[in-house]
Length: 583
Ligand code: ADP
Image 1 (spheres, rainbow, N blue to C red):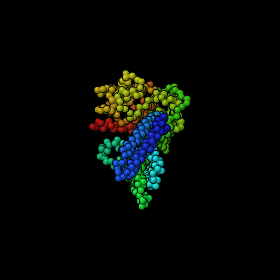
Image 2: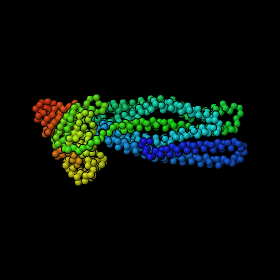
Image 3: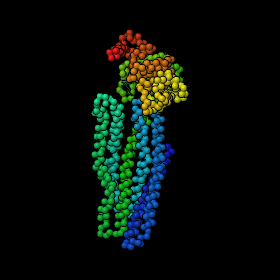
Image 4: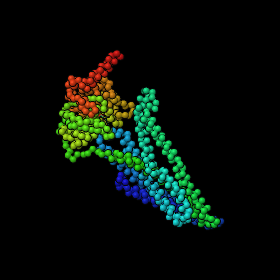
């Protein structure tokens, strides 16, 4: 209802219409009773039963009317349901846009997409169908109770006994808190299996290359086993209650026949037979109602689970907005005693780290994997907020810089450049939407992308990812450098890609980097040490600490970690060259 806004009135209207429909649907049964009554009264002179026809039409009319009301109820509920679904998606996306970028990165887009799209879709089915059905299933027994007062109440009571047993069975065995927990586990098992399946598909090349089987994907196999176990356990535990429920729900008439024997005694009157007929006919409604309640109950559990999943996103706090917004005065970066621990992690990723980078300086972050290089870069761009200490850009705490302004100040070139399925032109323009075509093309040229554009007949209008269009890793990194050119932010964070080190591309990327870095403050996460020998300062990070810092030559002289890394790096380069010569 919170998401429904004014559309909640449609939900109310739908409930009222559904209730009216449920009451009207009982009228044809009364007509059938009247028909049987007349037949019994006039027998054996059946041609005296002159009202049968009008009773029949009356029944048809009310059956149709009940349907019309039900359809109207569904129309209202659908209108509300689609609106709620759309509002949920919009509100969630608005919220996600305010969340720390690091959160979105760490959750993975697949999981977030699933919650935003599928969980909201679950609420659609529930609101559109199950809510009106639930009203019907409540209104029908009330109508039946009223009717019972008119007809033989003893038979009415008898017909309720199996219905009540079915109901109790349903609530204890098929709904209860244990079932809600099971449902959650089922959803979890399904979610794990799906995400492991994605991992598996991604890993297919590895599997094929090394001739492995699915069993080498232990986690995927475990996820399937877990799902299988859950499904089998659940199916088995449901077997008895479900069979009993279905038997009782469909066997109400049997209870009536027993009741007829008990109550009728020796004198079977027309009136009694008439009432018996009436109740036997009407039990079909009870059965349908019970089935509807059962399904509505299941989808209610699903929808509660879906709402919990959505709340897991909605409850994540956005980065706090500062009250004293300031504009950075230059492109310097200062980290002062910064500590940062990832959520759920036990050790600090960054531990009491300080770093002062003047505007226009080029610095490099090196060190072993897991040392904290990416984390430092993410903190400067405020993907997360620091736990202790402060980070300043242009002498202003990043927390006091407006998000948009901060993004104007900093360009981040990721290792894996995210190119979207649109034209090259539009992909680049994303970094500055108001840029003209000419400016985009200039940025592409500056980023040494001319060869990529020349390769395709449609040039800059080629849609990335469409048939026959393939850009290599190195090419796509150059395209993302073009984005940085277009944005032209004074601070540049480069995560150097190591994966695509073909020589031609490396030269082009290097050229593009050099041009881009000119007159900018640059923080470079470097893997090829040869690329950073000219850096103003090199920081060696290990376990979240700076273990060494200084210029290339200074660091070589200290004969510490960097010197060792440099030595190893040169060894590997030499090895590559020698191997190349031998070949
Ligand atoms: P580097 O870039 O030097 O390889 P990172 O900054 O990626 O190092 O990692 C620093 C530490 O933080 C590592 O111990 C790593 O396991 C941890 N870490 C990185 N990203 C996350 C994350 N999203 N959640 C939890 N821990 C993380």
